[in-house]
Length: 266
Length: 149
Image 1 (cartoon, one colour):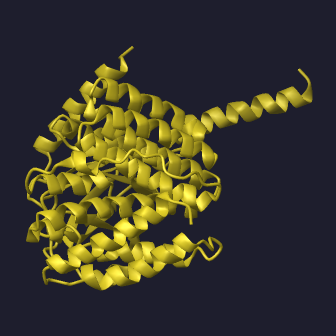
Image 2 (tube, rainbow over the protein chains, first blue to last red; image 1 turned 60 degrees about the vertical axis):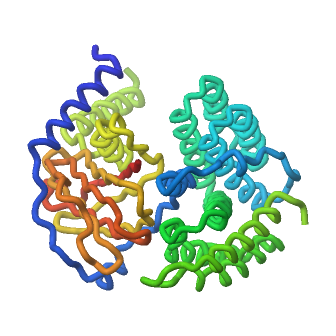
Image 3 (cartoon, rainbow over the protein chains, first blue to last red; image 1 turned 45 degrees about the vertical axis):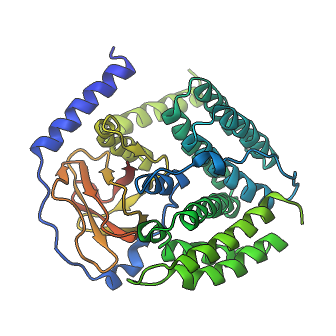
């Protein structure tokens, strides 16, 4: 019997072979996007490290100054826990960028506590353990992978019990924290390419639509986020124009305020 | 053998036969995802981080689906499409928000695997078009995963 590793190696060889000998059919050079409107799937929300990776390529970033490990307040409201969980997972990606093992381990533990708070602790326990073990070995690639798996498992577990809205709040929390860090970095060392990473109007519209469909989550922080996204939209939805330093600073202020709101009690 | 046991035995045999003659009968998007991940495997060794999240569904022959995705300038992306239907022919292509083909020329498709490569010239929304070109099945499961570096 083939071992799993051997199977993977063989698969890799087969697929590499396929890639070498296969050629794609000619795709049309242009398509009518408007005709696709009925067949478009929802966006997959990018992970913070996808943005951080692009940011890193623009120049050295002092990630250590963005690491956050304070436990903050404890909440009982599930939407608040979901938002906080998303931001804490994003904090994990920041700590990985900073290669800060103690912070990663603390965040791994915090993720587990929060996941238990919304009833999905069981699916997170192995990931939390793996995050802590990988941080001990300073295996940052594994930590990144486990953080992605953590978010995925949390969201799958929520979707299975029809808590899709909470799952969306996890994504939103992560996106807000990622945007807070991105704008903080770009505000300090402005570059047009750095500011361009904020050009995410469809993603912002996606979150707006999702929040509008959550009237049952009648919490001040949710209303605050809804109002803030209205303010952020024109700053990033600039078409082919550039996002200005003033806009980046404004978004930084807004997302910092929201970030503080997510981690502290009303 | 009691009638109940006989009936149960026959039902089990029938299920096993169905499973043997129609391998696609119990297939799912999860199977398609396994193939998409299999296509991604060699790229992990090249430093691509493959996302856990993925899109999936089923399409009839000749049908297409568009997936909207936020991509960031500075990153490099591969999208891998897979299906468990071995004799199916599938494809994946990447367009920018204006509908212009945005992919690199090294994309490939071979039977139930396909892949497309993009190095975004601008940060923004892109459309990933997945298609089942041909398939012996009425509906063909597909799954799309992506990786970046």
